[in-house]
Image (cartoon, rainbow, N blue to C red; front, side, top):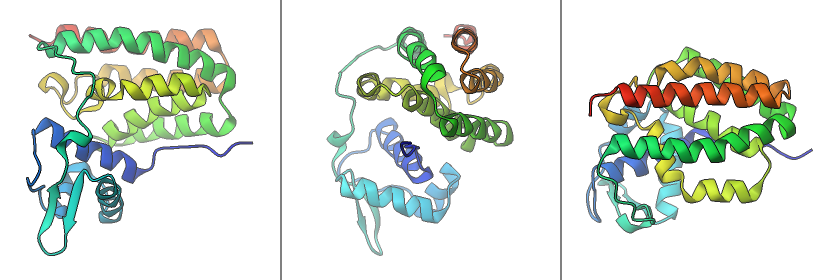
Length: 226
């Protein structure tokens, strides 16, 4: 029995700090907000935040100066390497949906065949979080749900492909894609039915519920006024 790899809160916090730096076009030497403000923005404890900052410091993305604050160190360390230039965010999201359907649809089917009891329990636990919390905690939980599906698929090559395009995927879990923090709320109910299908090992049902989830996401994107 293999140990489950799951994304810890400090890892998700680190991802969100990187997103903040990227979205605000911060450069080397720019100062991040005070720790109390970051903790409140992310909805995480000071302990998780400190762990997140330590990991980013180790990657040379930021530098922590005692008594002075936290500063961006190397803005190039996390910028999206594919240099994809799509000006229309709505079009970009819909095109990324096509990629998600291909990659995550396969992952869902494999997860229904290969997920361990621990993976299934983790998916259902995250569903409880999604139904209990509001932003930003629900955003982090939603991201963790889909990452758990990729791990449950137990295909390292598929996972490596997903990791190479993760910056595109992460737009779905930003706080306000297309300026709407509740844009994908209609997709939330399908997370539980999808998790239950994976837990039951029902490949066809899992794919059906995933397609329902993606349909809800695409419909929400198309409804937004561009």
